[in-house]
Image (cartoon, rainbow, N blue to C red):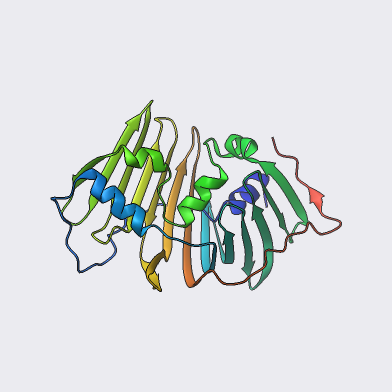
Length: 252
């Protein structure tokens, strides 16, 4: 497995790209709402959690090649994201913290440890821990920009948009104020995430599938993550230790 393919797998928790339809809802949008009222509804409806676990399928497409694996993803808010990937047997394990990304793969007995400055060089676009966490949990990439966003409507969705210092952001929400898609672009690079389906846990909505595309300066990486089983605030561990005898991959 090539170095960049490994890094892409390490980021498989985030991103894919296709046109999606809004999540079905019996509610109609309220075109009389002012921007601040919509923003408040979005804030009130945001996922509230300390721990999240997903089990399902993930796929990565990069440079014309596609990889598909079964994954278990565990997330402790603000602390770390742990991913175990397998195809019949365990293949790789990833651990992402606010400071770095670590992973190892068992086929070639290799591992890597990179900070987000190195990830930016490899993908050609800015990626950090908070961005990954917000994508997984269907929260806006830039909360402050959302608060100053302009509001418009389609037949069945609320659309908020913001532009500042060359950065353009667009969020689309359904009538129940669940995020359908979000786009961030600075002209050279762009991130697009689409959410296809939500599952209800208690009084909260958790995304079931996300498709994302990260377009860098000279490359595009696509991801899809589909959950078959979701758990909120359960007890779990996130064990991660580089096995002995593995070879370190030296990345830029």
